[in-house]
Length: 404
Image (cartoon, rainbow, N blue to C red; front, side):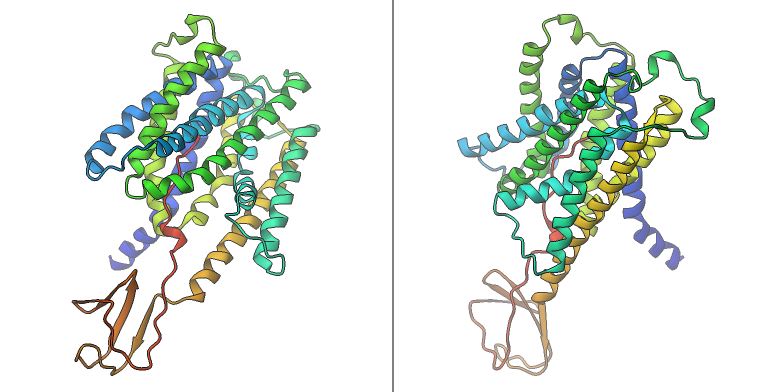
């Protein structure tokens, strides 16, 4: 029973991330069906984030109602910009790109996110590149390979790759993806939309790093505010882009399912699950499962949508995945090297600390030092003992607002 319990505890992060990829894959398929049936992606963004706000807000109020940060004008502008980048620009361009291409293609392009985030971090001075180190070389080469894969998917379609099971499937006409009948210019335009969406998503990560310094203990509150303000911004964008009020009409149909599913599963549950996994295993572990969603979507899309997969998409997706793991490997090695440079605690035998002999463990935390149950503030009498300050474990960094 003990071994079974240990196996369960060890396997939970894996099961959680695999389940999460199935959730994301389902969102792409359901959303594609809804868009094919005529739903406006502007309206879908509004309903999605309105539902997400309604779902997340009660948890933020219950768990984080104490010591809420003051919303000053700079803080409000950060939240406003996060909402503009995420719920408005990212989601609208992603759905527009999904409408013009296919779910598998969109998922493959989304794997560019780590490489784009790395580029944005370098531009903003948050990442330093030392080409003498192997880990930096891996990140730079991985970024270049990822961009090459995206360009291949955008500029080259090639012949259709026939899947064994897709030859015998005849789905309903309204569910069939229109990628084979879409003009080349629409496919190219959809690719550009997906690249813009991923770029906005990467920019959100960079800006969010600063916003989370204010909301480091109130992540649910930050997510609620971003979703709420993003909903208001999306409403304004929809009124400008859609002049027919009938587009707002929604019933008990696929449109409502798409909005509810995206809001509850990919903007609420996924945030909580991904946050738990990141705190336990780190962001590299969580991000490494991204290509699994692309595989699941390809299989589900061929069954449900009779989706046609092109050779250019397959080759480009392979390059993107290779580049993705090259960037992730570089980040992983960087995290390991940083942890090994400075130890977190020192054990030393038989030194005299405040008149107490024996083996002691000294852990540093700001200006405070703990020894057993005693607290010593700025007063330490030790002979021949060196104390190192710990670095922040990257696995404890605050999480981001999720996408799709």
